[in-house]
Image (cartoon, rainbow, N blue to C red; front, side, top):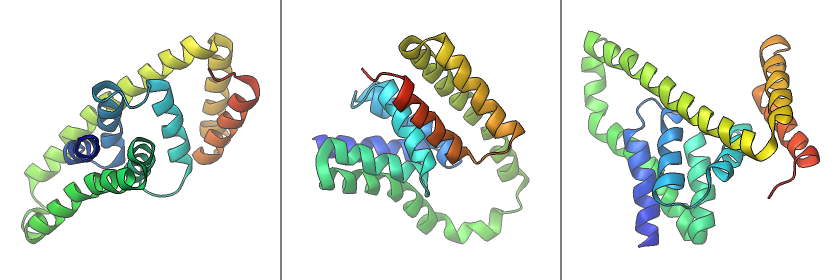
Length: 178
């Protein structure tokens, strides 16, 4: 049953995650944290930070790690299959329709309409991470990391993966993990 839950959690999240990685992250978080309680919101946030620093698609990195933690190598394989199958099935079934509808006004409108929904999902997830970090680390660390991250990303144009690694190093040195 555990393997079916792993498959289904990632299959549903990636089936409904229209728009790629940013759209699937909140859905994966909901399945992993809220639905199955495989990890806490804080643990998911840490995993997300590390996964963002690594190359490759975010959903497969999350699926591989979470699947391995829950069910070993077989769990990782099943979670990865659940992540990849929705796209593979869609490509196989819908490939012949691509040329017919690629310039369709309705398809373009649908894509534009989904963008605000994805933004709200990401904002809610960021707010939840903010609350978790604030409760666990305090206002001083929160403000310091927020200001430094903002400056390094927007003003100094440092690559986001380096900012994430810097925040991880800061956390490893100055913050105690419970």
